[in-house]
Image 1 (cartoon, rainbow, N blue to C red):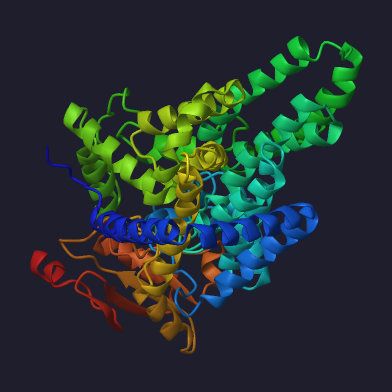
Image 2: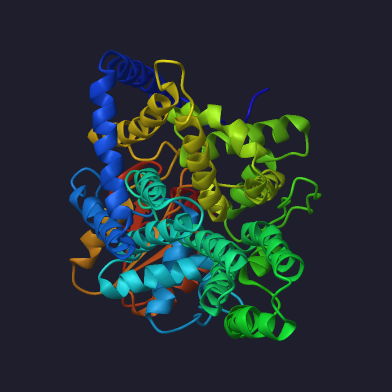
Length: 568
């Protein structure tokens, strides 16, 4: 079986190798110095216990730690540069919101400016749900879109901590939030790119934390937070968010009507449903306004419009492919009629390849090899009736992720809180396991967490960002050209000429919300007539040529391709 886009297993193999060595060393040290490690562990637990009594202080400390540690690592991991289509589309959305608009008017020269995952009609805007754009816009107002990414990751850790407080003892909640920090907020592509992940994860944690509190004791505040979690999921990861929240909603209604019979119907409406409606009704209205602004119809989402306009390959494994479309440039032809159809050709071989690829991506984002040391506790977690809902929620999101053709780890971000919670519960059970003389379960639990710390520290030392294949490695060449031209007088138009071996994931044609006012505009070479109209529209600008596939540092005054003269 030959996969057209196989996962890069080398980084995972390397981390497995180092994890085995680290686990051996840590286990040997704890075995040789059992009393000393037990005393150190006891002091750590006492500290966590004391800190756990100050949840507000812990929440503030976690937020500050996430932000300042990541800033301190800028020499190791600089501010990320957008590298792939999705990031550029999100950055366009953030720029649009920062300009005080929901969308932009279509551009007369849209054919030469066409970009991936962007709608140009009826309005010029990103196709993605809006909340990640809100985060980037907030960061842009503060100085850089990446500031919004960092703050969203800090907020995610705080919300995760709040969620865990409703499910596990305070010291375990604090430990779990530290695990979230190490896994997602240091070297993960969630904090080192513009793709997102933190917003959807915060929405899922908000919903799960509110659910546990409402079932235990219904309160209006928690009902409103549950609805806020739904609103966040609907505007960040709507598909996965729906799968995640469906069993939670059913469980909530069951808990209110079947278990909380002491509550009268009037009390249920007043305490739970009215606060929910107070959040959900404005959310639905805002989504309708947003859809209408971008697509002209309140029920047509921007992504739905983009799929109808550009995509011919199926979104789900069980769908059939549409007939190929004709596009205005060669790059779209290669992506939509080439790569997408080759990636999934409706055969079992391609299904197996995609499944394997997703599995590697999910493990890379959500797991580490030391997580398996908590496996002895999984049996008891499975037997616990209180945890069944968590498994159902995780199973639905996983099934939804594997049934779509393309699914990256941050797509499943709503379920990240469940992954962390189930890991902690497994760790709690494993920690209680012991022999006659040796508390081997506690040793495994300590080693599991220490391996995550070692894994993160090793990645920092080696300047190794997330092992996910292309994130955190955006090509700075385009940014260098952009800054070089911005340093010159006047305005500029850059024509991008691709080679025959062009990587369709590495596209340079991306512009902001207000194209005509940009100092530098990026455009595609299409044909002589189309290019002539483009030059006439942007007359007064200096026209340049870049050739990223031949020499990504090349910048020279524009000259037409040689074959145009030969054709004449």
